[in-house]
Image (cartoon, rainbow, N blue to C red):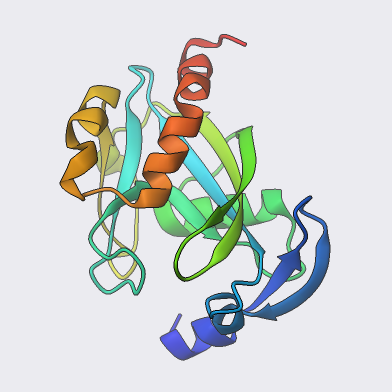
Length: 181
């Protein structure tokens, strides 16, 4: 999608409970107005408890070259959360035919936007080189251990949103991998 198409993309607007209250262009959502809009995240973990991260393309306007959640994207206007999750998972990693587990929903505000994050997780047996991704969006994917993430936390290689979500969800990731409730 070209940058012009991206800025004209229509996104739903939601209230703090996730109810749709209108729509606006992506450009309006990513403006000083900071209109609250929903996004989906998928955290992919392997059986060893490592988490798959994507290295954002250097051509991205937000957080280029940083490691981030395996899948993340906007919900299109008229699309439900689960459909957006499946679409984004296929577009970003070629991942389909899986059953996600909802982990969290919260509002995240950055200097450029305000998002209602809908976080999901899945345990996957695929090696990192098995995922198919477009080089225009993602430069690389690889699994990180929790220790690697902690060791590199202050090296400015992760997006702030990923670190916030990692801190919020680490115990849920462990439960997901080891089937604890």
